[in-house]
Length: 72
Image 1 (tube, rainbow, N blue to C red):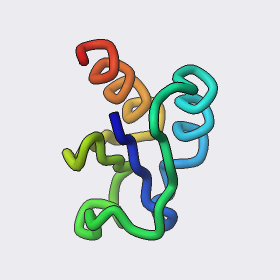
Image 2: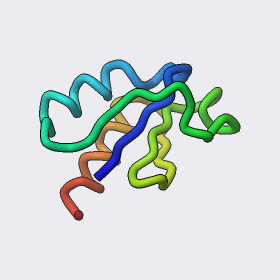
Image 3: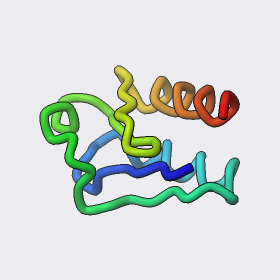
C-alpha cells in the first residue's frame, strides 16, 4: 500500500509521523506533489494507492487512513 503526502500540505506532519510509527511496514512518503492541488491548499490530504483521501483536520485524516489500512 502506497500512502503519499504533499510537501506543501499543512495537515501532513503529525499524521505522517503517527502512521510511520504505527505502520512501519507500509510505503509512506512525503512527495513534492501528489497532484491534488485543488484540495491540497484547503484540506489535509493524502493519496492511498493513488486514491485521494481528505478530512477537515489532521486527526480526521489519520482516522480515515487507519480505517482504509485495516480494511485492506
